[in-house]
Amino acid sequence: MTKEEILKIAQECNLLGMRPHLDGIYSESLEAFAKLVAEKEREACAEICDGFYLSWIDIQGRYEFMGEGASECAGAIRARK
Image (tube, rainbow, N blue to C red):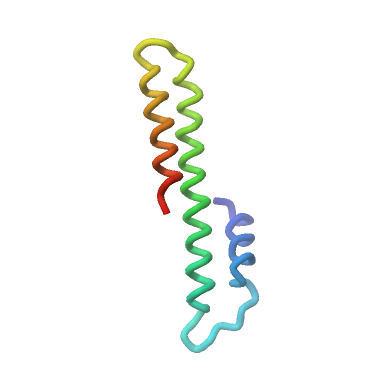
């Protein structure tokens, strides 16, 4: 993720400009931030698999199954929560 993406997510979760309580950052905001960062990372990983799928699926023969495997991996990554 880029710095700009991280800052945008932090802003969405109300983490920027917060005045922390004695125990630090609001735990609910921090949890929301972590979930959004994880979602972005999962999607980035799945997109890499999609790229392998597109490059391998058109190759007939011994590489075709690799494209199918890449597609399955992308789906499994996106299904994680």
